[in-house]
Length: 366
Image (tube, rainbow, N blue to C red; front, side):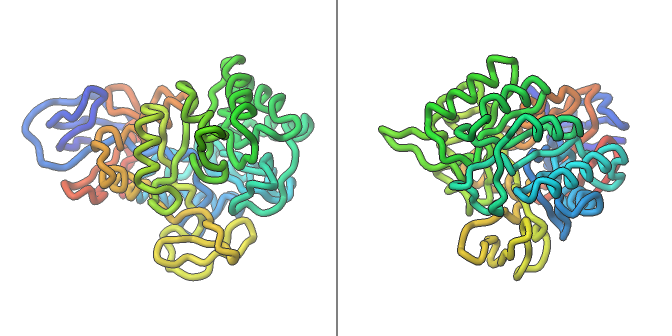
């Protein structure tokens, strides 16, 4: 197969043709149409979309994988929500089943993001009140499934430091979030994870972690100050102000990755929906619990790309936050960039940044 346009390579935009089958075979430079050929997007934090949700089990995972693929996401981690422990384990088993079977007309499922229940009861955000401690028995139950790639962990919880080390040694990315902890607790978790060769991150930067003050930097300050810590950010311009996004962009550089944190209502008509068993109302692009708390988003990553550009970020940098950075975060060497030998995960946008084509491992989805 061949695609012609402005191809985003690791060295910048190249005008020419991208040749590929299941993997990219080459790039030839020559005059080409003014459309943008970018690496497929990787979403490390997505609960649902198109009416499906990770907590629904295998069919919910397939539904969200198909929906987000039509918006440029070629790889994703279905994400759990804080629920009774047995329900969380069932959801992880559902992700494992779909990962084994694949979704022929959807995004590639690499594994799961375990967001909850190892979170602070004081910083639930839109999570249901089923938070529990990360005790060794629960950790071993999770790790035995061999499906979790990212775990959200509040660093102040009893047993959190030991859990962070255990997850890191198993190759799981440890993402601090939904935390009422302080700067020192966050720094300690980051250091402990990195000391055993692990990778630390932050779950939806700014949200459910408090703010940054001159004499009280908090977990946010710990993440921004760490050169090696990655950070997710929901760029729907509802969860995070454009100015806050730009501050994070300049502070984190190539450690900032954009996510959707999307719920089942993404792509559906506005009105009543559900998140983790809780009623959600979606109106004018905002998803709110009945108490007014901002819930999961209805964002898609093609829109996140346009939002980043509208905030003044160059297209190449915006694309990196959606592809190369999450690939590096997850330790993926086979995707996230357009170069010979890598998976042909490709998205094509017109000059106005409207999504026109999506390819997953050389198969056209859109």
